[in-house]
Image (cartoon, rainbow, N blue to C red; front, side, top):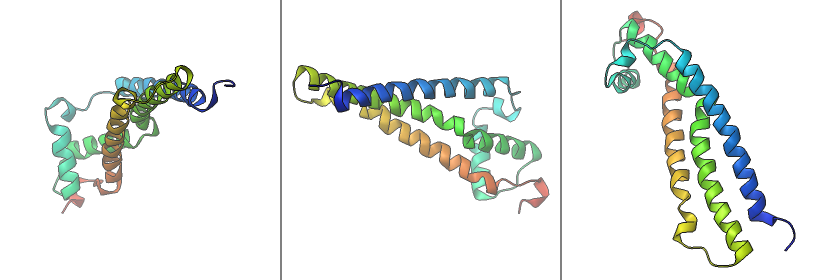
Length: 148
């Protein structure tokens, strides 16, 4: 056996990608923390209610429009996608790390080897949710008078 071969190389790559994405998440979260909180954001359920109004094209107040613009811009930020990327790369790291250990020490893959698939699937759900909100960018009205 020469070097670290396929599974070892993928393990190193997954680890480096996870560290890179973690740095991006810290930058993204730091930017969110520095932003002044929206008044509507302090209310329970406001996020969902505003997004429903945007999806259905219902009338909105200027405060709701501002909050919707904030939500859509946050979800559309490339750094926001680093959050599911960290989860995916962590799960991938676990799976390929287990495969590397099996390659080095022998053995057969078991259910435990593929437990890393759970955060990978979860990350795809988070990515989909972010993408659905980001796609609403063109549906957010610019002023309350323009809402039908």
